[in-house]
Image (tube, rainbow, N blue to C red; front, side):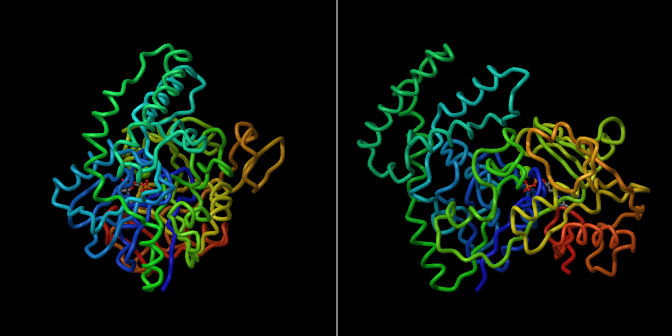
Length: 424
Ligand code: GDP
Ligand code: MG
């Protein structure tokens, strides 16, 4: 029996969804333990190409139970729309393969609005939110001003609770932001259209996971975003609002007793970053455009062009440490095939000195990258399925990373499709 957490090592979009879809073959249960519908996890398999937002990426595998843990931002509207959309493409989703924690808190209709209003107020100083309401949701969760999914079971009590929250939230919406208030009718409509359909999926997933553990089922924990977006250890304040680290998986999943056997840290063969914030190794100009096009680096949720740069060993080493990664899954190595010389950021220059330590958040803006060049392989490697199939320069690139961050690369992904991978 083994439990494994799949996490991002960098800024997100490393290819976690792709790795979860691949590795669920060996697991009975997949749990999303943090984050919300602002995720974009792209999965390409024999059933098609899907961009998942809140659904766990194990949803395509028969016999796998998918759990949304208490740590997620449960957005009933987006989740119900997502379920219907994925189902319309022939994927079975019912209460036997999707289970929602009754202890997950609900992202309420005003959270998206609050997100947009605050980003607008910030103007040029905005955080680069995806405006899915995630930050206002977690703020309200921790000040105990939202609703647990299990409360949907008692509509009358729920109505009274929502009325109290409505009165409180309208104070901020009308008096701070000067916008029109939400009404009980709006909440009733939201409840009818998006919450009621989810009722059959809501259960005590903590008990379900404890039973699964007792039955020696393997459990896979799926994270959103990456180590550098962790609110405690990331690039504050340009982080997300829930812990993206493997250490949070036992709590956010609803299985505090979980023993974690493996942490697969997903690293992209180069760097990308969506939204605002310091990005030390950022490339600009035609070189950046070429890499963005080669890697199709546009957000799955927002369509926003991703900022790009070379592999950043300073950030990656830090991410590996924060995640306690036991293995690395390196993705998108195929994308670098066009480069003659491959830039890699090996150190940062900060206050006139070179460092391999990831700086304090407010120092990041003062750091510049130290770039070294490795040999490119100059060919298409997307058909390689064995380590020996890779050109020597590609193997050297992988081992260079491995040595620099002190963690073995166990998977090398050379394409988006499920089987485009090399197991080492
Ligand atoms: P996630 O948020 O970490 O799940 O990553 P995303 O799905 O947002 O971004 C990764 C993108 O790269 C997706 O479009 C994947 O289909 C794609 N992808 C994943 N692995 C590979 C790979 O090895 N090669 C190529 N070319 N594309 C990949
Ligand atoms: Mg993504």
